[in-house]
Image 1 (cartoon, rainbow, N blue to C red):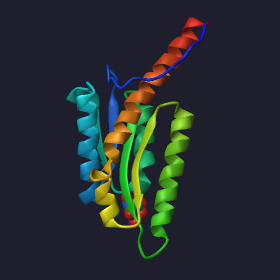
Image 2: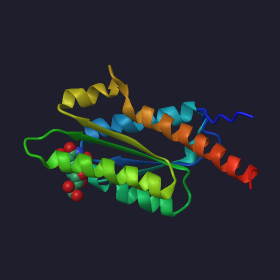
Image 3: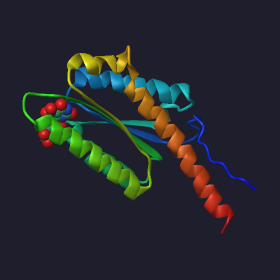
Length: 162
Ligand code: INI
């Protein structure tokens, strides 16, 4: 019989950690409210959401990993904003954040949603934080919900075939 796994967007009883960067807080606070709003509208209660602030996007993976190690979370949503500067510093921050978060997700097998904006200008960042280009914090939260449901189904499949 054909098997098809597709995660839905119901938060269920999953527990979510949101790690948010204080750097460019003017933007990231809107990503945070988008993420919280999406989680709540998809059924999560306040008690299912833990919010953690870190200094910058560079620090997101360290906090995300520590949260995963507590085994108290089904998914971690990482939010940050890297805006091009006059030196290459922003490239190191953005590249390291992307690499370390993707590696953490694969190695831990816990969904880590990447809600880090990387833009050339502040205007582009604002557009992606709740104005004309949507809210990437909300998108990351929906991805986290969907992935918890995909992984739950894969784990159930493994149990049913052993
Ligand atoms: N952190 C960001 O989240 N966004 C940036 O644009 C940024 N830039 O360009 O400097 C940034 N730097 C701080 C970095 O994340 C660390 O907090 C810092 O280097 C200390 O480790």
